[in-house]
Length: 292
Ligand SMILES: [Mg+2]
Image (cartoon, rainbow, N blue to C red; front, side, top):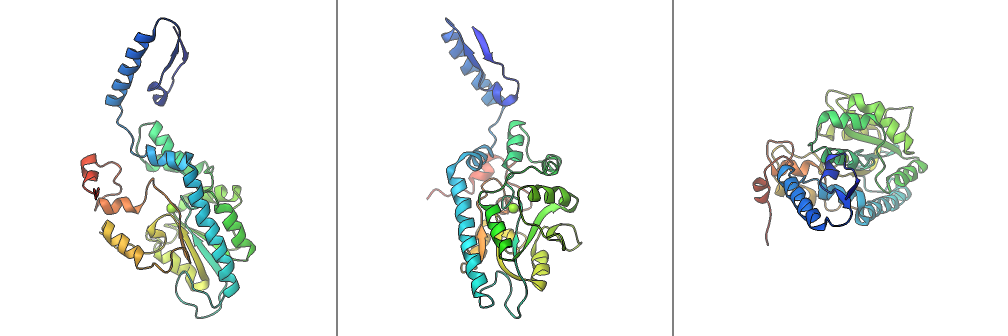
């Protein structure tokens, strides 16, 4: 019996590969024992399923492409109709240059590779590992994002990237975006990071208002409700749904939302006072399941 695939990391320890004659019964016992031991020692990582969906499914790619194809079409219509077009923010009271505001993570850059590293290392999210990932400036694009941004730039629309990445990560982020072909104006700062100004907090409202003072903002694109509206502290999941529904005329018209099943502020609504549902025991999550 020869072991042909020498597993060297934790992920492969759960699925050793063996070959040879006369050892099949032993092999079955060994594999079952290994799997049982693995199950006991290594709890399943609840991010696995959503991460695989983003990384492998045709459905994720189609979803993202649909959003960007619709947004591009609407952009052309808004430009043709301007100034008689609905804005994504505020009202048309004068003719200002056109702009769009896009979020970065899971909107333009696709960071499931960072989550995959955590899953394989059996580690939850950490600020340190996130900063290492960002500083590599190598995240791939969300499907459809680059074509959308380039279409906007070709229409002379200024693109503002409003991200909750920390300010000292701005250059690494700019490098990543530029490498992928994202249009980035260099005469003004269009990459607005968290903490760049004291009032630029996690709530992105102040940054949206900052842009809207000088530009007619015709579209917002993001993966989280917070990329569009301010979410009151302590908002429940039902509050968030009501808030989103109160803007039903904007979704798919001037506001465009990408799917992100891996993380988001939706988790905080399920666990008031905390950052994420991820580390909560299953029993805590079960309470939120609807069975009819
Ligand atoms: Mg995002």
